[in-house]
Length: 493
Picture 1 (cartoon, rainbow, N blue to C red):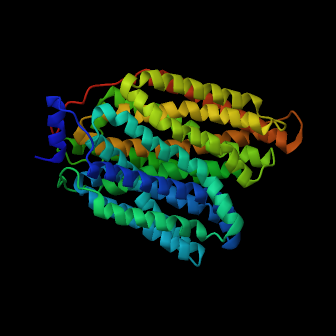
Picture 2: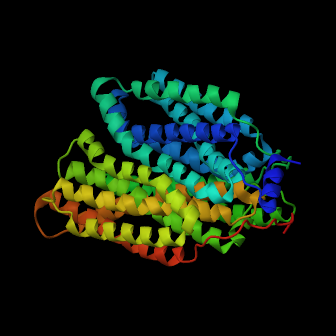
């Protein structure tokens, strides 16, 4: 009888459950590992202009440091659910964080752009697995009555790391060469790997299911093509040359066709319980609504993350460090509220948190779409961003916990992979949409006032459209509710 089955029996018998020391340690190590990985990515996004200059490459080439990482994540994440099913917890953790540590070391020592690009791909492999592994571990070993609080802790990773990343990057680059961006992260990641290998237990028993080799390239081309095409929209909209229709349309079409074939094949493989990404989690209406509303919320989060730095630096004239300090309070608000929201979820369920949270975020986006001009005060932007963060703090733990709690436990790893995949695609879509609307709004501005006024107009348009997206998220969020532990589903159904 597996460890998972023993816990289920205890819940049915009504016995109280507490996390053992080994279980708590496993979650803590995974939380720290995920935090370091997200922090590394946000540090890198700010450092790309410096890397372009020091490595003597043009901007379009330098952007591949970000694009390669995102593409790797998009390719590997859909496979992570299968890997969690097939491998032991400790082995998969070792591969994931070991890859990330190796990538960090290679990046710190990289003598050329090409080596650094390879290092980013290696980092992406590890980063793609850690978050689904963390969510699956939480849903496996944490009692239902405490899952909200634990998911609130995960929201700290999602919110605080991106908030402090630009500040940390600005401080390091103001005093040290760019390789120290990786040297500073490497010891923390390496320590997490050593501790995790000693203390993380193996949870449950691996399932020896065959690999469908056709599904892997279909998944890679499908998700990778969509993310690459969306990324090309954002890069083209922000460049002087504009959007290249061919560079956008070709990967999007190829990705859509491949993704359609992938999904059809998974439905066929589900009949024999051998799917690479089992889609039966979507049979739960609560899970589906949670995934969609969460993706729309993530779209707003990533959109604001790209729009505000552009506005603050190009319109208000703030430095990168000042910009990082201004958006820092919002991230800290999300992080501090995460555990509180989780405990409230455990007591009241998702709806009293999700709907008001989405509404507050929508109002904040409306304000940003109204007040931003060339003369707006920085404190006004700060207040709106804090309000947006306050709303999102109530949303993310709620959709994660409600969605994953609504599927049978044997599909939890696939549900975690689906959440992470949809967020990755939604984030790419949010970035592309925001930058494209910024460019369209700025190009169509005829009110005078020069470049700053045009940039402000484009920023307002992007935030107003984001607010409209949140209206849709609110409507879908009404379908999210707390459900009892999902009943098992027989194989092949």
